[in-house]
Length: 281
Image (cartoon, rainbow, N blue to C red; front, side, top):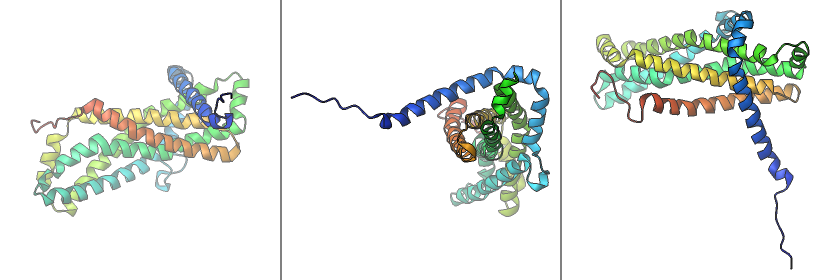
């Protein structure tokens, strides 16, 4: 009686092998993009400026919804209005409604504003990057650039990453301002809390260090979004349907990555037991 060796069939192993191959391809792509960033800023600075304009204002007018500024402002304002309304109601139950200003400075700065601005950037800008590069890939425009001795990766991807870095700072500051203004409006003018009480506790907890860390979060998220979306677009295949699938996969991957990295950055920047400046804790 002979013993049989049961080996998995190639069809079973194929998804795992393809997954590892895609992971290696994207990891190599990310490293190359970052390494080519200084050269792209020097050689293709005109394209960087054009991408900055497209990211911030889009091809249509701002009032027509063409720009990311309006999207970030609106999403940040709506999310922070809910923070103000629900935060005030929750604190009022235990008699701590004057502390709503503390919660606004803490939650908006450290968590809500960076995440909301990043999701807006992924949905508005990231998917656009995937669609643009995917369309160029399936129409052989990327191969044509290589034939003309134009390095496609620095020209197409590194320039977009540089533009994302330059654009995310003013975009994020607009979103952060909208979050502060919306929470203040909800608490002071809707709920009727004294503006002096709200401002006192708000400025007691808000520090330049927290704002700087919050901006660092937004920059890291912008880097992740650009790399993920450009990677999926650069390696898109399968015609227009493949480009659509790549955009969907890129959006899912970037949002999940933002959620994971947000937790890690919060622990790294503020610790597992964060302190509250101004309260002596």
